Length: 100
Image (cartoon, rainbow, N blue to C red; front, side, top):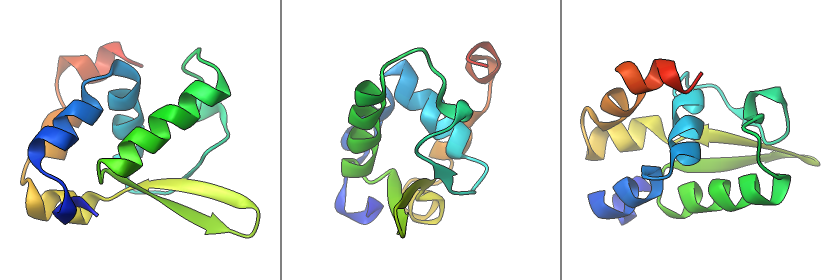
């Protein structure tokens, strides 16, 4: 949960370009399956698993388990309450366009 983490934890997690792209993808508020073309960032599945773990441990995301499927969702409400404007700043601007 975002309330258990400080800003340094969150910023350290999004300092990696792939993790920032994950956050930008999740900013639409919908849960996204951990497998799918929206995660085609040109890295191995094990590397994506590592990135998902870092984001979860920093309080940026949650994993939703439904049967055998796993989805990941941004903890948007908690992050907006704790760090107002942070997610908007991370998902806006010229960097957003160049990572697509």
